[in-house]
Image (cartoon, rainbow, N blue to C red; front, side):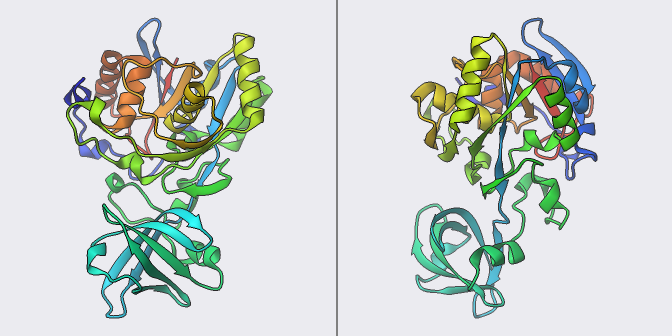
Length: 336
């Protein structure tokens, strides 16, 4: 299967720079896989498609302000992009032009807060030691929200709220599980009153989410790894839901990856490098809530595996014609 088969035309002006407010007022494209129909709604009207007994599975990861803008002692600017915590104050990070730095060199980030280069790795990655009397406090004080590059603007204070789901709980992501951004507390309460159960998984979204596929033969693409964890309570709820013939509704591709990793391996915790592309046998997920994804990306491959490539590309072309807003801060899609 060729990567070029998953391309589509997208005008730059349809890439959303900010989300609509309130969160649940964005547009919702509804895809019915059985009847091959496409409907156009508002996100809060998702209540018309969910039924009592369904389970909504959400990713409760929380985005950290991972971009640390620092400088060398010479004054030269340098950015340390935190990827994941190794232990205590040691972090794996991405540093542009890391080859120009020496191990042991200090990068000053703020007053009483700096990063020491411990080890250089490949692909611009490095191990850094964060030096501060309160590292967590200073990450939040000096760090910037890591907006995806296609948003093409600097982060603002408001992004600390906008780029976080209302149910975000466990810190560790460097990108938001954006399908969850459309839910408000009020909408979640309404769904609960309708008898729709809610369950959580944790998958810390990594920078690999934006990693382009560089090979035309998609079977040769190596997927990035991300940490996931599925609580026993969620596993039990899924089993009960399936047994009663009700639907497991994944909120976002990160939830799909966590659940289908469990479906494939039986493991409820670990590193997931599952690569979902057509054809794929989904063992757990019945319905998917997602955003619109980049052309030729691992995410458009995943939704194509779920809904069918031709149907997805037809829907995306219609979304462009109807001026939907794309990507992280954009509109949503419900695939039934």
